[in-house]
Structures are given as C-alpha cells and as structure tokens.
Length: 485
Ligand SMILES: Cc1ncc(COP(=O)(O)OP(=O)(O)O)c(N)n1
Ligand SMILES: Cc1ncsc1CCOP(=O)(O)O
Ligand SMILES: [Mg+2]
Image (cartoon, rainbow, N blue to C red):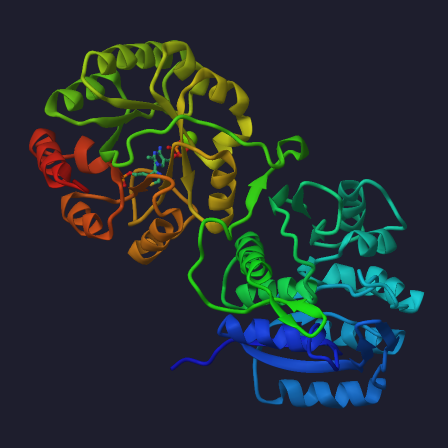
C-alpha cells in the first residue's frame, strides 16, 4: 500500500477537542492523508470563551517541528492559530523551507469573540507570510483586520493580492445573506461559491475547511477543485452535525458526494442564488453526433439519429448563419429530434433551434438570461469539479463530461477523465441531469460506456472520419436503441 500524503498541521490545541488541531487531525485523516500536528499553543477555552492563549516558546515549537519533519516528506501545510510574534517568526521560516501548498486560516477574530491576538501577528502575516502561501481563508472580520478595514470584501481581497498574496477565499458564512457565500480571488480569476444557509451553528468549521483544502491539494487536486471538494465536505459535515455537550460539531465521514453537497459557483454577485430554468430535454439523449455542416445533420437524421449538434468553428459569419438556419429547418422535418447549436447562441435563438451547447469559456460571453428567456435548452461542458459547480448553478438541460478518452478532434488541457470519473458524475447527478460522455468514443467504447448507465455518448471522428459512416452510425444507434427502456 502506498504511503498517505503527510499534511503538516500548525495550530493550537483546544482542550475540549472541538476546534483547532483536533478538528484538523480528524479532517485530514478522513481524507486519507496523514496528519502531522505541530502545536503553537495550549489554549484554555470553554463554552464561555477563551481565557488563555497558552503560546509555546519559540524554542519548544522549533524542537517539535524538527521531529515533525524528521521522517516524512510534507505534501501540504495548513496553518491555524498563531498566538504571538515569536511563533509567527518561526512559521515564516518553516514555510520558506517547504515547496508545498500552504493554506493559512488566520485565527485573528474568532466568531465567538474573547480572542485577542497581538497586532504584531497581523503585521508579520501581512508583510512576511502572505507572499509565501498558496491560499488565505479569512472570515470577514479577519479580512478587515488584514486589509485595514477596506470595503467591500472584493476590494479588500484585491488589496491583499496587490501586496503579493496568490489567492484568497473569503468566508462569508456569518454575513446576513440568504445564501452562505464565499468569495474566491486570484490573479487569474474571481468567483463566488454559495449554498443555501444551514441553520446549525457549528464549531470548528474554519479549521475543517482549511484542513480539507490542504488535504485535497496534498492528494493532487488543483486549487479550485480542492475548494469545491472541501466546501462539499464541510456542508455535509455541518448538515449532519452531532451534538457534543453545548456544541454542535462537524460530522466527518467518507460517503460519496451527492448533488446537494456541491456548492454552486458563479462569477457575478447579482447572480448568486439565481434560479435558472432551462427546459428539460429527453433524459436519454442516446447517440449524439457532433458535426460541422447542415449536410451532415441531414445525412445523420435520415439514418435515425435523434440527438445532434452543429459545431462550426472556422466559417465566416454569413456561412455559419446559413448553415445553422438550414440545419434547424432540416431538424424540424424529422420527428422528435433534439438539435443543438454549439457556441453560436444568438443565431441559435434567431433560427429557433432546440438548444445550445456551451463550454465554460462560452458561458462567460453568453447572455444566459436571454438564452433562458428564449426557451432554448442548454447543455454545458465540464472537465472538473469546479466546472461542475458552475454548471449546477445554471440548472442546465444536460451536463457533458469529457474528454472521457484521448481525443484527436480538439486540443485540450485536460487529461482523459476515464470511466471512474464518468461513473462518479453519474452518481452525483443521479436522475436530476442527463449526463453526456464525449471524447474518443467509438463503437467498442460506446459499448463499454453503455454499461455505466451514462445517458448519452457524443462523438465527432468516430462518425465523420469513418470509412463507412452509415454503417457506424447504424451500429451506434442500434447499440443504444434499447438503452434504459
Ligand atoms: C456534447 C458536447 N460536449 C462537450 C462539447 C465541448 O464544448 P466546448 O467545451 O464549448 O468546446 P467546443 O466544442 O466549443 O470546442 C461539445 N461541443 N458537445
Ligand atoms: C469537442 C470535444 N469536447 C470534449 S472532447 C471533444 C472532441 C470529441 O471528438 P472525438 O469524438 O473525435 O474524440
Ligand atoms: Mg464551445
């Protein structure tokens, strides 16, 4: 059995075992990582507040650190309570020694109050730590403390990025909004992740979120996926919280992800919580050829294909337009056909197509409200968890996952997703969204994918590059004919 990735957990001990290192250790263990605790403080706290920070001496802290790293390679670091400037200085040196992801959950302003950390700690964090870490996860009061109370949170986060921080996830959990919303900001992107607010007041949630993100990074996920997976883990843990004395505590378990665990992701504050209502399409879209001309649409509908997409990439606007109009007209001459237009959503609306298919980049440029109002179905591409979170926010007509196998039809930055990922998407989406598999699918692979229960298989080259496209298409249609009867 291979060794679990070791996550160095730098933080304080809560003697009641609710927050701090105890929560960190439980979280990391439940992610199949190995927790390596490095104690900064032996706090004294109970339900009526924190009475003593109990900082360790710098010497004791560093001696402990040498043991922590003596026998393991550290794969990620999570930092929580930094009780004073001496420990802060030591942590700066430790972070400099490791070229691994570092998550800093700055315990500067506990929601329960009663905590007073000397201002020098904030200064060291700001001037010496921020430029060395992967992600900062402040709550709103902590963001205020670190940004000299700049408002609104988007500007405060931007200010920290300007000072050298790579990425910030502001936790808006305690704000008085209908949805519990966090705000992510980095040099590359900004977005909101939101979920319906859960009523339970649960202890240690910040520790669990940051430790979960650190674990997901240690396991090899990229930062955006790590955030989505950690949010999902925390949501479930809060929803199933258990009562311990006067507290509610996060429940840790490893059940497979469900659709309600996954947060929704959007790029605009005014769309947080917006309920989109794209019409449904047939659940089993079946064999779904993706072609580049109206002629191909005609040929394949004649053979009996029921779902088809026109994907034109390199034609002049006038030609694209006439192809789309011709293809819509053809699709309307055939019975019960679901005809989607790729990318060109405005022309799809004008021509009266059945639906549009948009990738994540296309979603940025498209007017989603206009597409919704036009009554067109919407299909959305996904290649990762954060893209799934984005797709779910739109409540689309179907969700596509790809490339399932290596493809030669398009250059893509994503590795093939594989059948295991497809099956995971299938179980997450359950019966709520049709799932379309795309990428490298030919007849033998379609036969294999059929066993997974996926609702549809989309393909370009297997049909358009075939020596005999008619027999290949007939075989695929026949193969899928009794699907989910
Ligand atoms: C059914 C289906 N799934 C995925 C895609 C890819 O769409 P997108 O990510 O927008 O990439 P392009 O096709 O525009 O290159 C698709 N077209 N159809
Ligand atoms: C457009 C697209 N999106 C994901 S894979 C892919 C190409 C699919 O083509 P092929 O079926 O030839 O692999
Ligand atoms: Mg596209």
